[in-house]
Image 1 (tube, rainbow, N blue to C red):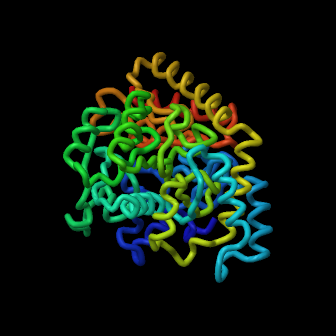
Image 2: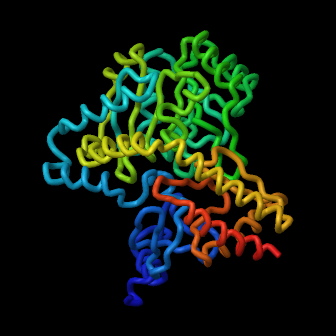
Image 3: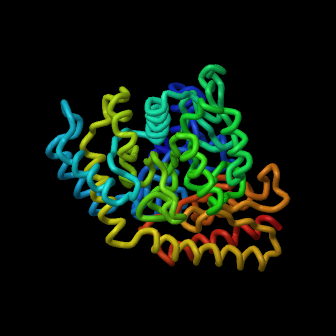
Length: 404
């Protein structure tokens, strides 16, 4: 490999032409020292950095890779649609096929609209709810991530107070807090937006309680507000339909992205008939929103999810990994907290407010071939195997040993 192609050389070149060298959540300055910034290829459950190092990939491109990198069925569908066309004067027939497939599989969905990013979808949901109700206030759980647009970005630099006007806050899984926020909004409440589970960065994850989910549904019914489930991160990993279907609770609107097209840029809003007219009335669009290739990838992805029984497969694999991690932590006498769904593991250490333990653990695991994250939930994909989980556990053994 040429020294001009390695990670350090690429960082130096990027620093000259990119502010800060990298932007957003992919900036490795947010990670412990030693993490690569640039990658050259990926296959199945593995990824290679610009120095040629191979890792078991437990970030899965921060969620979009659900079947594995270069899934052959998805790649074949992409090749077929690419040969026909992608960015056209209007949508290709595959748009209708995909929308039909989404409506068929998600219980609350009577219609679908397609976008590119998760933030596009959550913003569209909020806009539709306001158009339908004629109201302004949206309730958002404290610390929840719904995208990087001015109304919801976790880093407010460059935004204004007006960008975040007409919002109320509540505590996830705390129905009294949600009710208090709704009372404060009064007759101006347009919507409540809630993630499929609580996956705030750097905090233990929480699954929604049945009482909270049912209470949120009842509150929206009483007030005439729309219940929005942001399933951008969790969608289809935990259930064939909406994540809250496992609780028997149906939202009015839902936002999707991440896993729906196995790494190809796509997002979706699904909604009830009662919101169809409002969805048709608003104006949202983008130059690349009708790209046919990602839609073809999504149709193939949905089919493959059903063929392999994706949620069940990830549940089994994740349970195996979680038990292995628990055994290692006990053996080493280290306090490890594993939270959230096993298909999207988060590992945090006791007495580690500054994440020094997490950083040391992940640095050692990285050196032994596992790409992990010290404070963000990770992801399993359908190409991961028991052997991959064993390789992660072997790297984790080195991580625990690094803690002394």
